Image 1 (tube, rainbow, N blue to C red):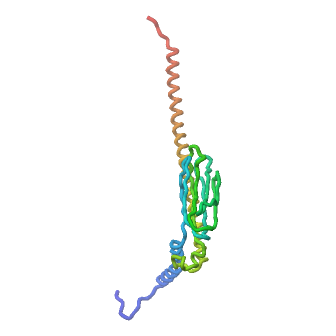
Image 2: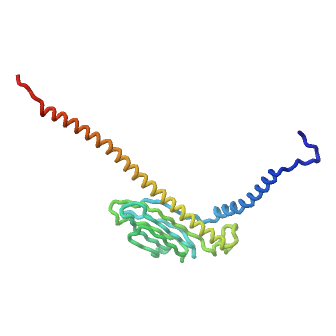
Image 3: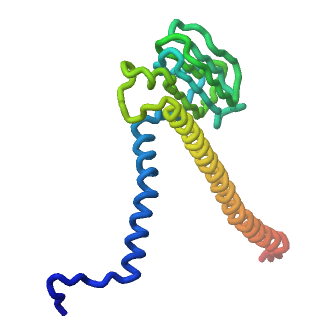
Length: 234
């Protein structure tokens, strides 16, 4: 059925509701999408790693920080021996910021006093033959002055330094959640391997035990039969 020119189609109640709903959803999603773009552009990502430090070895990692930057280091020994390792943190001029012989877990946060490269080392020299599996995070968050000063800021998306500080804090929290999830996944894989090993041993013993009993029964019957066998001498 055709519609004459100059006339408009009647708008139903359903179409009006769908139009209002679509507009409200677009208004609600636009701030969320904007925040997501801002996080992707400006959030300083934390560097999380899972490494294996062999016996009699030392592994070091480096990251650059400016003055007043917030440096956060967290680590945890996940597997190996007594789950302990030596940790050392040094500044740009090899100034010792932290040093410990045997630690299982730790978290350190400090403000960079000098511009340069900061060093994090895991030392497994005291272990004779056991490697250590270590999960750690090395994060450097820019100071507020970095975003206030236009000559230092490389982007112009956020003008307020407080907003950037909140984004950096949110990025650190999300990194901690991601690190915890990776740790729980690693523990799950370890427990799953132990469960599979125990299940295989139980299955093997359940087959080996009755088989051994059956063989011993057959051998005893043969032995007893030969023991009571009467031989006639012709």
